[in-house]
Amino acid sequence: MSRRLSPFEAAVLVGVAALVTACGSGTSTRAPMTLGRVNPLPPGAAEITSAPHQRGDKTCDATASLRPGPLAQPGSMPPGSAMAKIVANGRVRVGVEQNTYLFGFRNPQTGQVEGFDIDLAREIARALFGDPERIELRTVPSAERIDALRDNEVDLIVNTFSATCERAKDVDFSSVYYVSAQRILVAKNSGIRSPDDLAGKRVCAAHGSTSAEPLFALPARPTVIGTTSWTDCLAAIQQGHVDAVSTDETILHGLAMQDANLEVVGDPLGRDNYAIGLPKGNSELVRFVNGVLDRIRSDGTWDRMYRTRLSVLGPSPGPPAPRYRE
Image (cartoon, rainbow, N blue to C red; front, side, top):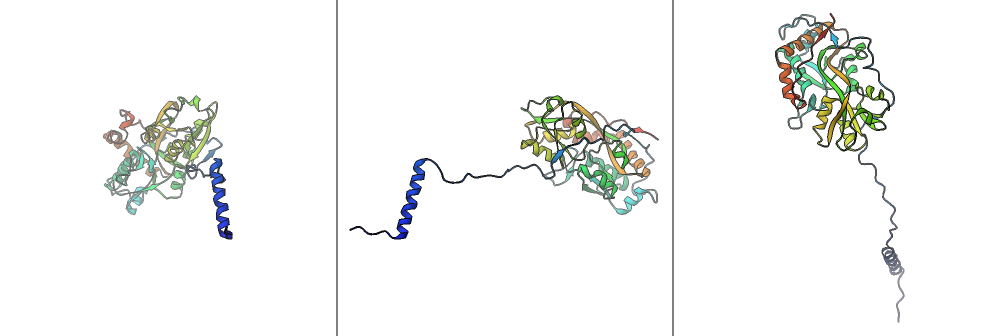
């Protein structure tokens, strides 16, 4: 005599039968899984849709600065001068970068910010105080360098800051302490070898830098993606968001040293003249800084800094000769 199944037992049998049927059919009734993008563009990244106009402005000679003044003894600046005010504050506040390998980067082993620009900033502190450690380093992204000076957040900017006529409307510049050509960083198997190969490609440049302008001048313009820092451009090319990065070759070689799959290629798209940025209208401070730069050119300090920080770029080219307008 057969026993009638309970409602619960009947439901279990129906479920088992359905499972067996599904397994035997080779098909799944599960809805397809949708995964979100795991490598989004870095925060702040966005297409640059119009060409900045900085290098193209030739209404001045941005590489010519004020002739150096006499250097006072450290700690004994002329009363009432901008230098005396900095000394009274106990520190010189310098806007730098911590994401530009070789020039200004945070050493992961020591936690300290290091690089050619940092050494240069310390030489200015040495001239002011007699102590290169009397310095306050403040991280300032490329797009905020002018605002940081204008808003008195820093006393100086030493941050691969290219002297241009457009920028000189808002800040003053020291004499030039380094000259770099703009080139292209690509994956070694990219097939990109020259600026002409960037047609239809996506190229990364930092917001507020001079690097986007030459890209817009190419006969066939690429799509230009702006980011907050150059390490964001490195992440973007590693993750496939862009095909290339373009800026000064000094910065590009620093990025390539962090990824053996990348290389610097192509003829120069232009040249940048690095100078120290200073608050507008403070000629006394400009002359003082230029006096410090003259000293490090002549006493071998510039070459020592190059050998310590930039020797991977090749033999020292020597410091660029200063140009003065008065």
